[in-house]
Length: 154
Image (tube, rainbow, N blue to C red):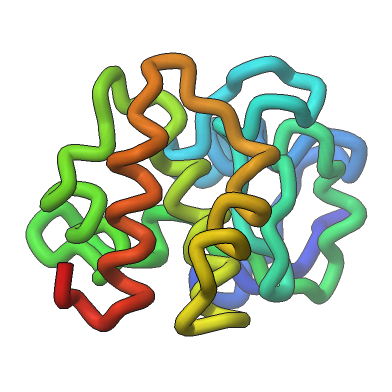
């Protein structure tokens, strides 16, 4: 039995057990390594992806819950040669220190910007709150998001 979903705009039929967390399917079956294993309990956000326009923790989302849904990962935003707008802003603002949380941060921020293209600083801070950065680059992360929200003027 397969689970059918759309992954980064492409229809997929995934063969993993429906109870397998999406994070493991992405990394092991699809070879998409952007989302990271952080805590395994949906508390840190390193594994954040977008499902039907909303950020979700892929480490606690079973594959079977995604039948017919659209999943977007950081790999779906751009490439190293042609990064997406948000990815480019994170690079420009040097938002990554160790980089472990960055894919999850970018995906949570992308979900906000897709819904609210010009969020206030309070909206950005509140929306980003579930994702943790242990390196303390929060100000740079917020600056990168603000840059995109302001149309790249920062």
